[in-house]
Length: 160
Image (cartoon, rainbow, N blue to C red; front, top):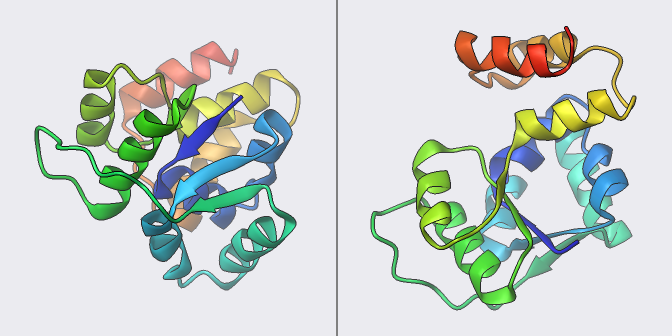
């Protein structure tokens, strides 16, 4: 499956030590250079090391040439480039968490996934023992916001 990712799913999974879930599920993930620039600025030493290793191992693939799209609203450079890459490369899935970016991507007909959905799949596939624990780690270690309504829904899907 051809998957493109924005920064948030990769950086947050790396912070909680779960980056390898994407490799298990997809084999490789493609990102634009703008996303790699954002990832390279992470201050979390272990997460940055995991991301660098994933790139060295060749399962995070950085695409340097992305044809920019005209987007209906301004987004940050990583989001804009990830959406452009997903559209131009015919990606089957775009991993993106930000609400505005997800909305724009859907407008281009892209199938969307995100961090919480990836953790839910990992839980259902038996790769993580507790989704609630992973969500707590996202909050505590990565500073990732999860609304209570979304959390209840995702946990109910996992049977937790």
